[in-house]
Length: 172
Image 1 (cartoon, one colour):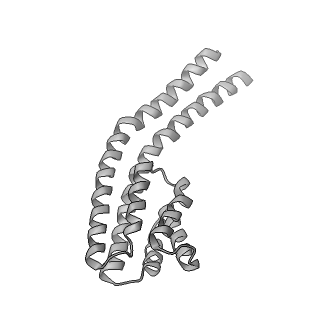
Image 2 (cartoon, helix red, strand yellow):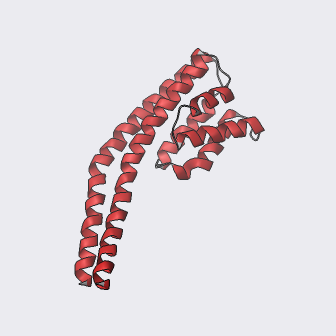
Image 3 (cartoon, rainbow, N blue to C red):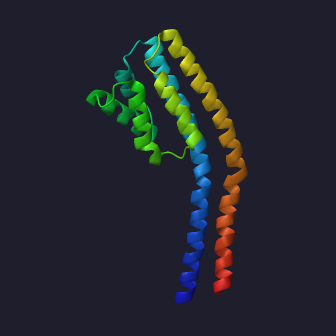
């Protein structure tokens, strides 16, 4: 009886690891989509409503889900405390502070950091170009992330099940 429960726990644990590893791929795709939406809202606030950046960040964070909400909340706090001299520095620090909540890769974060440095550094036309560039880059990342998800998500899930089954067979 105890051996059966132990084998069941081993199988469930291995399956769980496979599910967690596989779900990171779909989580990355979802977060990139949500980032695009958040940045489009930010563009609307900045370019068309002429809202100052801290207020635009606050407006966007009210309509976002975590972890994107955490990113904008952190940026607003840093801007309000005047911890950093530029919006780009505050945005980069916010990315660093909240990166553990994201399923994004290093290249995704680098693109977001470079975008952050363009915030508040140009006129309206320059801001429009910056938003256009980041949206195109995120579109490209989303396509790549979706391809990786399709390729790897099922593999990790099945690998978890099969490795759990293999361990159970070995222990029997």
